[in-house]
Length: 136
Image (cartoon, rainbow, N blue to C red; front, top):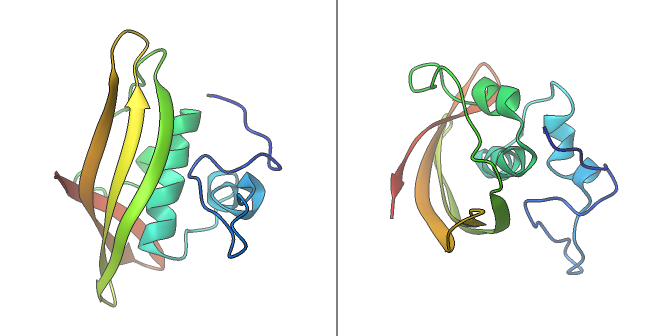
């Protein structure tokens, strides 16, 4: 697990209305460092990206829907996450949403790659969960 200060810019890259980076403690850290649920599917997706950056497997597993959750998560050594672009956030109904995003990463030994996905989320008992996604 990688350390991250609450006053550092958030790994998810969110910016304020004034164009300034939002600090981790006021962004994804609100959910990664507490038991508070992310308020929207987009916030959950951003926090899951940050959790991948910070290698927080317990958070990723806790926010993955039980019907599709893997038994464990392994992080590839030396991966550097390079950025996140949220392309759209669509609320389908009161308990379903989709988020389209592009995440970029570079492995220790290979070229940078892009993960372009449309992810599906479900709200159950006041908590959003990642359900699954389609690679685009």
